[in-house]
Image 1 (tube, helix red, strand yellow):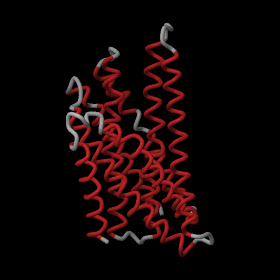
Image 2 (cartoon, rainbow, N blue to C red):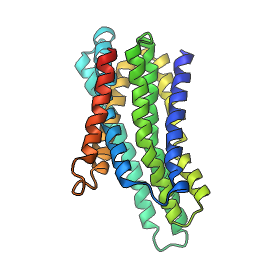
Image 3 (cartoon, rainbow, N blue to C red):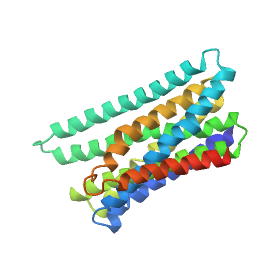
Image 4 (cartoon, helix red, strand yellow):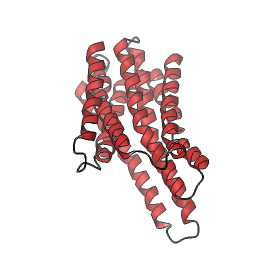
Length: 267
């Protein structure tokens, strides 16, 4: 349905907007508050882990049991692992880009290349995130717009958006340190999130018009989200663990509890 694609577009425009808010910290602050960013990252990780099961894997298993000729456990596992593999591949591309940036040290265009690779790495990282949001909204086609399924899709978008805030700052702040103006640092920082609306629309279109892939797509999004949460968000938010051993961890617990509460209460 066109409405679902439009909803996915609006949701991913929202996640892009949060990226822009993160990039805007370079305009108002010399550097973002590490404590607040750690709490936000932890909260986003908790939301994404919970949403991966209740809003993605569980519906994938249920739909596979009724619509797939293959066993539901195979469909869910294959989609989940493929999503994780896709995210791992994206990370490899990012690592290669960063390696290229490091290898330019000592060259005349060192500064320009490092800036390009920095923006590219965050941009590539945002593609599977946009796909995950688009898949979540496209999956509403088979649920009849129930309150719990709609809230699940919205919560996934919120989780992705929250973790986009520090990503926007992760681009704009280093640019500022490299000597770029606040305005230019902001513009380049927010530009890293522009791919999310495009990826979101693609993900929604795939699910809406190729309904047979829905269980795989839901599991795919779950695998991508779990990998992002476990490999990137949780380690990142625990950087100051010795000084504040439970601060970011409580953010994870609160994020998980909020997502669980919404699903159980509305389900």
